[in-house]
Image 1 (tube, helix red, strand yellow):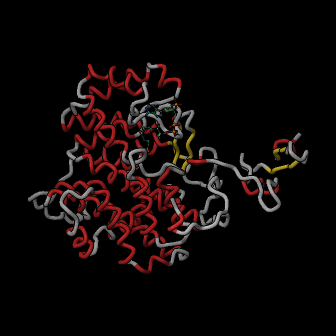
Image 2 (image 1 turned 90 degrees about the vertical axis):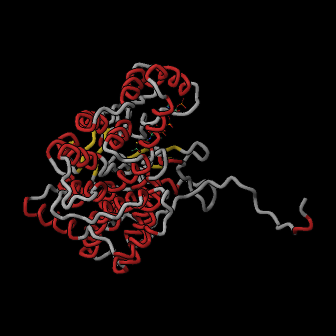
Image 3 (image 1 turned 120 degrees about the vertical axis):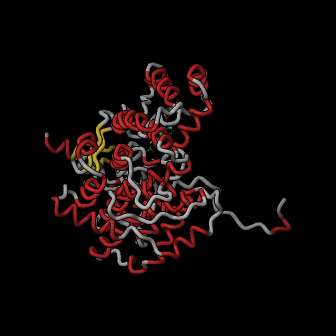
Length: 430
Ligand code: ACO
């Protein structure tokens, strides 16, 4: 019965009426529910806080099968990309849909590198922050401020213009991030070095001291490159949803990226790796792990770096990150918190509470340990996430802009407040 698989039959028990709702790509249109009336001019809506079962768009960028632990960019498995590609090659793939030829990659890298310098006035803006300003706050502010430096970026329906802003965003995010870091230490800013790779240059802007030419450690450079690849996109996560939501009112992309970065800041999203380290420090020793796990099971706090809205299996990125961690520790020395992390993982993966709820380590469980071993403070962790995710945000934003199905993002609500009533004068209130 081919028809049966193409529609969903809904029988309204209140009226006995029957509705055939078309199914396309495994989805029904929420607006098709409108014909099922709850009053003369109101139709049924779907109620879905946190978008647990609501697709807000159709996308061709990233595929995730959370139950099987699969992540693919443009069809390519993350494991293969992380092994064989560079971050800029991955960025090109995510933004353009296909892997670049050598000439295309060279051209793309040239444009990104060309746009890595920031206007000197942005430096003055950074100077205005307190020395202990959280670098994520600095990043959110400065990337938003870029919109005032490139007023032309408002022409979002001009493809060439969008491309130019994309180069700028991908090129300038590491510079803004590194300058925020240097400001927090009171160090002079280290300018981009275009001879270096994307991540090599980022390390240069973070760590260069008095040497004339900074030489990144190749193991750390590659480790950071892989971490950036793993964080480049993750379909409709909280910050990408913010990017699309803000972008739907059609501001310039810098303003939308500032909003997306703000969404990434929270501990349930990009702030999780910082929260993991704080948790590991709070536990303090391997033998305190069982006690901590019991506390989590008793409802006091969460095991940070565990669980994921989509992955109900081992996060494939966590597997790759664990291997990188070993390489970084070989260069920088073992992070003393690693032993606590491994013990937490071992106990949690064998504990019924976590097994039943399908809670596995996510991408952030080990990334914080790596960043800390590289000498980066915890405050910088969400910033390190925002740099590569900018690629995903921009790709998703552009896909949204050219999708004729998309509209101003404006969800419905179910009003449960007071019914209409007359205003009460101040003198009559008690
Ligand atoms: N530790 C302990 N229990 C947990 C955890 C955790 N980390 N995560 C979920 N649970 C429990 C909940 O208490 C709940 O139990 P219950 O059914 O007995 O009430 C059940 O598992 C389901 O939890 P939800 O909150 O409904 O799951 P949701 O999919 O909404 O949450 C989230 C996903 C927010 C990531 C959650 O797992 C969490 O808070 N994890 C810790 C923070 C973290 O690591 N975030 C990073 C995510 S990855 C990223 O953003 C890059």
